[in-house]
Length: 134
Image 1 (cartoon, rainbow, N blue to C red):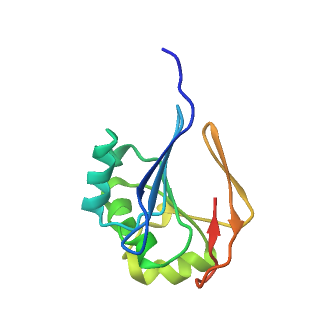
Image 2: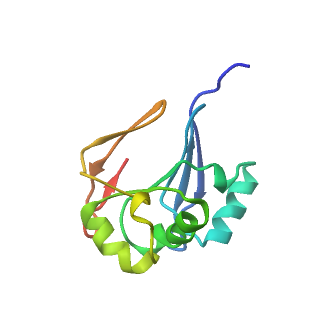
């Protein structure tokens, strides 16, 4: 079987919700999850993928159109959530309880490694606690 490269799918964009799915041969990530858990599950099914296979969710910032479904998915599927400390503080009360072992805090500017994928984080300008992109 030949391994395929990087796949990126924009699941939602705009004020009603933002979510991007990134897949390599060994990793499956979401960047933001601004839809409900049910809606993001449906969007994943449209691209023949399952939310239960997602290895991690990376958060850009704490606005609801970027985090709406994060808490539900973390609790239901045990998916770890990655965000910088200020973003975690700003979103903690909005996403409900997330198990401590699923809370992955890192510094903006860090490079995160997920199997065969290195993800660089960098600061961006936005009206949020400590917005970043990957």
